[in-house]
Figure (tube, one colour):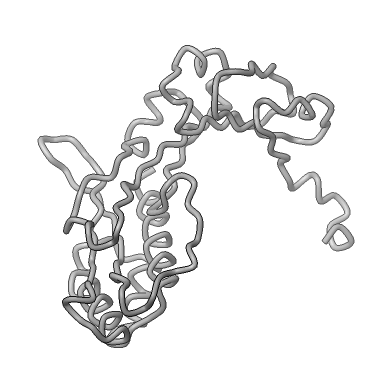
Length: 219
């Protein structure tokens, strides 16, 4: 790739954990990822972002030591349920930073979309025993307060034993409710898969694509 872009480093930001002192000798643009308050990082002209992960957000005095104009707050918004059959029909998204980050005078925010902090793709279980689920987010207003709500469309093996029909039924549930959500590329994927089923991996792709476009529309 460097052969294609003579000044590739001008397009890249090098990321370092806050305890990694190698950032001090890096002359390229850098971002520091903060997971604890053990190491205080000095500001510099090439330090573009201080990214504060969920583990450190409760330490406000630590965060306040940094230039807020370079600060990015990352919350773990998605509530993971195991097994999939434990998901309720809907629940509040566990982050409101899309509504509040400007009031905090920070540069930006993140929320892991519909993937939890530390998400690792699983090897999957036996197809006959997996509950299929699609996660779709939307903005709602309750008592004049805006919030994000996650809707879970799931089909359990007890509801549909056949794996392909279970997938088709899950797609159908999301498809039949699609008009209540912002029309995004995620919704378009659902429309493209209906009335057939799809892979388990596609459920994640649908939810992530939809959530990113929803948050983009709100900021």
